[in-house]
Length: 169
Image (cartoon, rainbow, N blue to C red; front, side):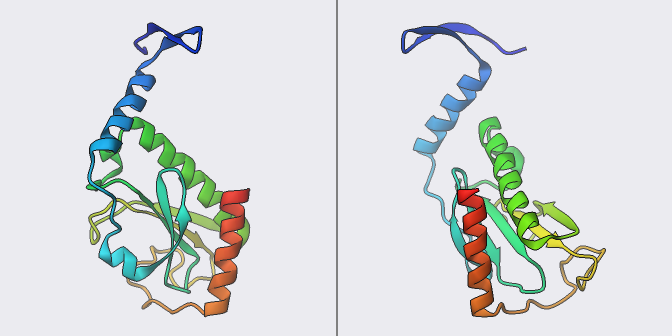
């Protein structure tokens, strides 16, 4: 059960909850943590398409699969459990938003969502549109095919459509 205390906010009395305390801790932590820097491997393997409230949105440079990543802009975060509850909830909101956009654009059979981090120790969430006809189906995609470079025009169209769906709905 949430702890409550009475507080006055803009002339309105309301109950403060443990969620309010978590938000305050998150604000304090954001002000005192080192700046976010995208891991060098992720910089090399992806295209930055923009920022959501918590995460950087990236397209993976592999034309075999429509493949995105979300990287929370927090320094020194390795696992989802390293985020506070407010940031964890925001990450889930962003996964839903980006996943829905990707599924709508690609008309895929299945979305794979994973946070592995065995090679890159910075928290990043893979969101991959899978089709029954892709080279790895139904297995995981890792190690099945060497990365295939995107056609420049095609990836720009994909990014434009993603931006429109993710940021404009």
